[in-house]
Structures are given as C-alpha cells and as structure tokens.
Amino acid sequence: ARAPISGQPVEGALFVAGKFGNTLTKVELASGETVARVASCANPHELATSPDESHLALACYGGRTVDIFRTSDLGKVASVNLGEGARPHGIVWHANGDIYATAEGRRSIFWIRDPLGAAEAFEYGSGQDGTHMLAVAPDGRHAWTTNLGSRTVSLIDLKTRRAPRSVEVGEEPEGIALADDGEMLWVSARGSNAAFMLDPETLAIRQRIDTGAFPLRIVVRPQGDYAVTSDLADGGLSVIDTATGELVTILFSPDGERIYVAETTTNTIAEVDFASGRVLRLRPGAGGGDGIAIIE
Image (cartoon, rainbow, N blue to C red):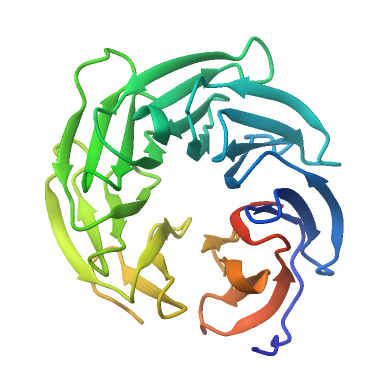
C-alpha cells in the first residue's frame, strides 16, 4: 500500500459510486472523512453533477434508471426510467441543465430534458454494440459515443436525428472526452493500449498515442493542455500533451492542479498532484468505487 504524501488540503466534496457495494458516498475533501453514505441502485457506475452542484445523477448499470440525489445529504429526489434492458452507463449533466446517458442494453443514448421537473426522455439509437461512454457538444447539438462491442466511435445528431456516423477506432474503445473548445475528441481504446485524437466533425483519426496498459478512461485538463488516461493493467496514469500529441509521462480538480482516480479493488480514491505526479493522499472509495464526481 502506498502511504499518502502530505499536501495542502482542498475544499469541496467527492462523490463515489460503489459498484460492488451498491452505494453512493460523499467524502469531504479537506478532511478525507466520509460524511454520508446511502444505498443506491444495483451496480451503479458513472456520476455527473448538475451545473449548480446541488444535485448529482447516477447511472444504474445493473438496471434501467438514472437516479438523482441531492449533493447536500444524498437524499434521492427522482428516478428516470429508460426502459427495459437499458443498462445506463456513461452520463453527462450538461451546462444547459439536461442529462445525457448511454443505454448500453438498448444500443442507444438518451437525452433527458428538464431532469428535475417533467423529466422527458428522448432516445437516439447508435446502431452499435456496447454503447458505453459519451461526450456532448457545448451547444448540445451532437453527442459522441464509444461502442465497445463494435470497436467504434459514433457521432449522433441530437437535433435533426440524421443517421449516426460511426468509425472504427482501435480495439475496445471505452473512454471519451471532448475538449472544452470542441476542437478535439479524445478516445482511449483499452484493447489497443492507446489513445486517439479525432476530428469531432469527421471522426478522422488525427493521431494515435501509445499509453499504459488497458486505458479505461480519458479526461482533459480544464486548461485544455493535457489529457490523462487511467491505465488499469499497470496501475498508472498516462499524460498526453494535447498540442503535440506526445506522451509526457482521473478526474481533475476544478483548478486542474489535482487528479482523482478511483482505485476500485482497494476501495480508495487517489488524490494525485498533477505537476509532480505524487500521490498526496488516499480518500475512501467504499464499495468498489468506480464513477466519481467532485464539487467545490
């Protein structure tokens, strides 16, 4: 086990979906204390927080719902049913206030409008197997998905409902992230041990970058200068210069100075200093932490 390294405390809270324990946990970042834990749905995976940070949405991978909780006390306030066999996994709570989620079991994604009000859910088929993770354009007009079974990335038009466009991207593409300016789409393909930089409009592959072994997730630093993959098989992080595509060496803090990485089998969340790569401290991730989210 790694001993935590002392560092300056940060404010805010970390939320952890425990996929083995079927729990949702809130951890105070400054103290590392667990301040709330509640039972969740079966096999919860990804999390997303609302733009005002008052609520979070949980993708219930073992079922068919997206469940919504208050961030203050983890009180459950809503549950949106996506239909038989949905198995929602990837989830985005967009700046426009709507929620977008993949429904792997239905080979589709959902656009949930007004999730804290009428909560209307609109389905868009991907036509691909294993529609797992997604990214959404800043203007909400398009979404991109990774499709594990089909080895593809799809571009889905949310406004005109044109047929999705899909291209093969490595072996088992899973992680996906769109740069804040919408100019680059990043994909990690766990079976290829690589990250790919794509043109968001054409899905043309601009560059392939070798990473560590089995890169499950990829995130882009808020400043846009680096992308990071979490590499399951070797327990490391790969840091990529987004300007050059070069490998320099998973959730960034809002200021981009720290990375938070779920260590599922050890029930911990590692807080990593971005500049040095040092593990500053280990936070609790009870129940097999998988999806994580943060608020200031």
